[in-house]
Image (cartoon, rainbow, N blue to C red):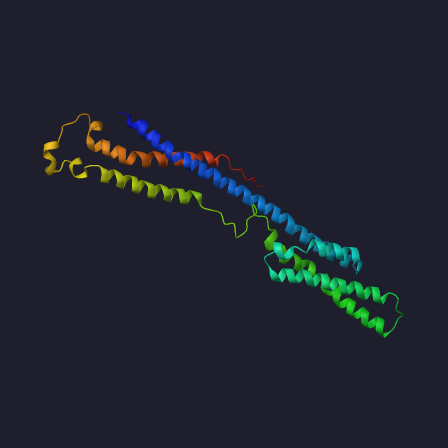
Length: 248
């Protein structure tokens, strides 16, 4: 007969191997999510940088070149797929529209002599220029939810972090209840505790750890206790791989 401790090890191995495999698979999913977030962050920041460069050029020179308008249009073309915010996408379009109008007005004004027409165009250009000058701070506020760097990494609401420890603990509770129920159901529970109906089956056993009662408790609670201790040990070991946060 296989020793009881060896049976425990066999059951523990059967349970630990899939658990470790599931943990490795979950870590791979987490790594893939982080990589996706980094890639998405880079592409979103490229859109923000293109808009910021255009606005800085307008603020610095009071005008924008055709080359800058074309570069901005290309850089922000994918914004609708990267930014889950229709208002922000419309705002980017409005920046391009007003910048283009400003450039057209400036180009039209240049050959005109001083007069009412040039004054009217200058007034329109000033209105668009003032609006564009105010958009740099507005742009930062619009992009802030998409470009914020959290202390524990870049996370989006769609990638909520799973509470692995709570899930594993509840799994242990359910497994322990099922294990105890199976043992209670499979043993002659009434006779186990020397019910009078089973008086003919009573045996005097010494020492205490050889009694049916102790063996039943050992067999029933041994696996849950070992799994719980193993879980604590694995959790303690995994915590050692976490990156230490540096504090000032």
